Image (tube, rainbow, N blue to C red; front, side):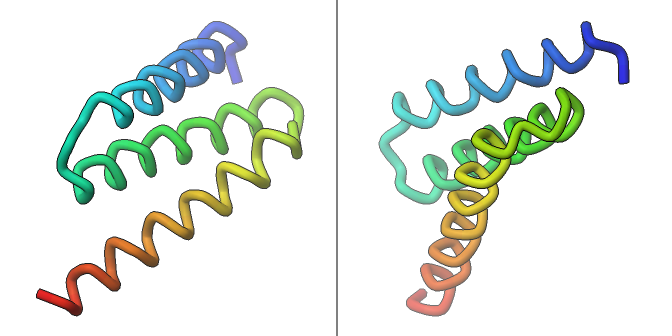
Length: 75
């Protein structure tokens, strides 16, 4: 993949993560944070399999999905 596109994916991931700290609604926080984590996983894959980036962000993404689905069951 084009290194410039990979860089933009990394920056967008950072923006989504920072944006998730600004929000107040927990559901929106989880969704925005999950998008950022997915972007970081893509960034890690296309930047040479950066496992220290891929593993924690992949785990956080699964945690966000779990709590989003668990929150829907309560409603």
